[in-house]
Length: 461
Image (cartoon, rainbow, N blue to C red):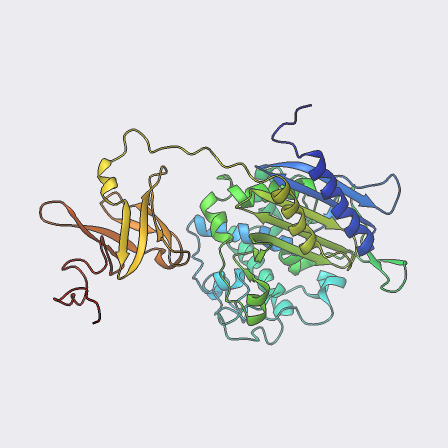
């Protein structure tokens, strides 16, 4: 028997099924449905239910709560990419009179705008949105609890303001803009603001008894951009592919990569947990891998989308209970199970193109910054990479500027200019990287800032 590389091995499939079965049983949830995405397509779907013969499939809707925020963030990033706004703009520039206008759009996206976590009472998740018809009803009399831009403080009203920003700049309701600009292009026809059959009902499970209580499914009104949506594992699997690769009909690969980049200053507890936030996406370090995505909860529902860009893997998990299974841990486990059982097969090594510039080889080899040794490599993708020969230290890839200079792409050297400096005869003297001088030998030549002791290297005797 042969197995396609697109399919999961039977042992992997059983391990995934076992993991969600344990989660559904121990979490005491009426139902749980999950999917795994690999290499741009869904490769596994699993479900568990307390009702025999009625297990949900990839087309059954569940409420996804705060995963909605990622969709709202995509709409804002589209406005940025079209030049309608800048992420550094204060909200007041485009949406005046909110009382929170000094926060920038980027700060609202990353929950660093200083706003309160919730809207004023009554509890917005279990009451009709009609109780909060205006933005002032959502942000309250004291919108800002913290200095703007100083700390991460998760804020549902912050995303309500971003939804209102989208409506103001598009001249249409948030739901209409979302459907036209994201859902329809990506083929997410089972994602909607209101539930569409078949959909799960939301339940609370008694903490000390195996008894259930139905939860209300309120229309959140103004708070919709923070948590209104219903979706399926099938649709969220496709959305996960978009978050990994981009789609030029919606957002480029570069823009979704920007969303996945840490933006918020982490508090001490977050540093310990390895967690931070990007632009509409949660980011965590778990099981030795970087995971991005979002969790969601509303009364009666829990949701999680977890993506490992390096492994090109994603997991989606949905459940219809108010509390119980830890879906963030479950999503991470589903990714880990596949990554460990079936490691990603790397692309074949390929040499440089036949027409590469041979003068690039002058740059290759060992360099020294002071006494620290580095290796510079010319790679087949037309870039160069610079990194320490020892285990730790600063490293980066550099892209050419087509004028003899190179720009750093990562870490300490991101955005910094690397200039190969040549002597009058054309031979390579040294590298100037943001004023740091790299030489072929430690402290070699006249280019070393501050000069070199004329007596040179010596011993002690």
